[in-house]
Amino acid sequence: MTTTASRQLRRAGDFRAAAHFMVGSGFHPKAGRMTLHLADVFAARMERSMDGHVAFNIAATARELGLQRRAVLNHARYLRELGLIAYVEHGSKTNSQRTRHGSDWTQEHGYRGTATIFAAVAPPVWDHAMGRRIDGTGYQARPVGVTAKGRARAIAEAQRKRVSRAERQPDPCTPSLVVPQDHRQLKVEGSSNYTSRARKRATGHKNSSRPSNRKQASATPADCARGIATAEQLQREVWWLHRSCARRLAYVLRPLISSGWTPQALVAELRTWGVPGYLRDPAAYVRHELTRLQHHGHLAQTGTPALNDDQVDEDGARYQAMLRARHQRSDPAWQRYAEQLRPELHRRLQEARNAGSGTPVPEYRPWLREPEELHLQSLSLEAAYGPDASPREIYAAHAYNRPVPVLRQATLPLPDQGWLEQLRDETEAKRACAALQAELDNWEAEQRSTVGPHGTVRGRL
Image (cartoon, rainbow, N blue to C red; front, side):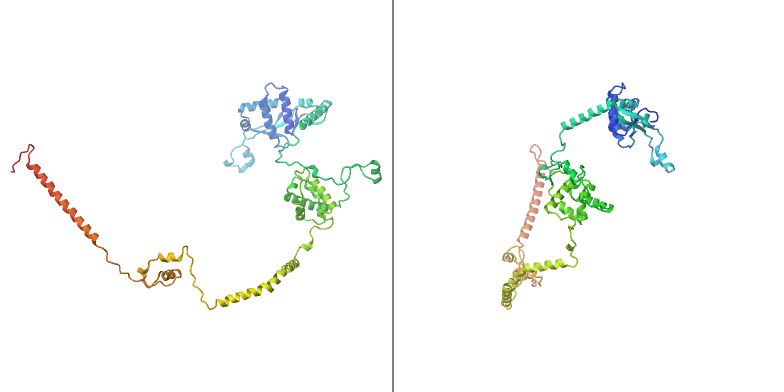
């Protein structure tokens, strides 16, 4: 950096332009497409530094470009030989963590080497080709003007950009993102802006496009700060004011704020306005609408507060007035009820009470999911509770949690013992059959032992 002939660059666009010019002109035989890729990586890192310095991490750069370590070093050397980068600090393997922490360094801090730092610079050849006049030499040189060649080049570049902008679409955004503004809905207040010279001299009108501040009263710094705070609150609560300038909006709304309009009243007023699509200048639209509303008398004049103190009902006077108005509105209906309907209702209620005073109150019966008669028929409890207790009494005792009738001992008939006799007889028959089968087997065995194989009968010894 102290010995280079190139001057310092701070903008990434200038560094990319210089790199493309130097590599495209063929000043270095080995510089090519990958060299420009490395220059783009350095240009992206320049935005992190105010001075245009770039930290050169070889391993990270190799991973980003997909190259080997040696290839990255070679292309960095090509940029240095072209005069596009210069050393600010050489990297080393010294542990920077020890230097940072000093005596507090431990093994847990680990190891981190010192990276190489490059400065983006512009070679004098590029400045001369662009037609720039340079003041000074080396890293501290600065452009102070352009030559005739540089002026012609700048004019040609501006014309080229203008043509390219005209060829592109006027609005790159999609219609779903930006709503086009309908200028036919806007009505310009006032007459023609043309004034003759003689009239200007007679009226003392100055030929200036800046608005006159005679209508605006002088405001203190505290008033300006209060207006800006109100404008910022409006930006947060009104969606079409979020991209406006808070200072301009505060200046436009200063007459209303000075006359006593609160932020809540301004928000309520602005939300009732019909916004014609996308607003390019919300503050100008607010000024136009305020002028139109005041001209037609739809807005409170300056000096009269929008919210009066009489709207605050601290002593309850407004509440009492509301009750009286409600009583007056409902008084005819109440009078008709009191004179015509109420006596008749009271008479009918008294007759109902007198008619039902002599009759006993029917016993409450709980609701069933099925008819009660079907449920009572399904209860066959006479055998258990006796013939005197009916199923209805038994069910009512359970339903109302009353004492259940005394359960009598049922005299069950003697069981039939015939099946036991049949089972006993069957067992004895099986036992007798088994004994006869055993005797038959023994007899057959004796017969086989007395008769020989050829039909001869053996004698017994």
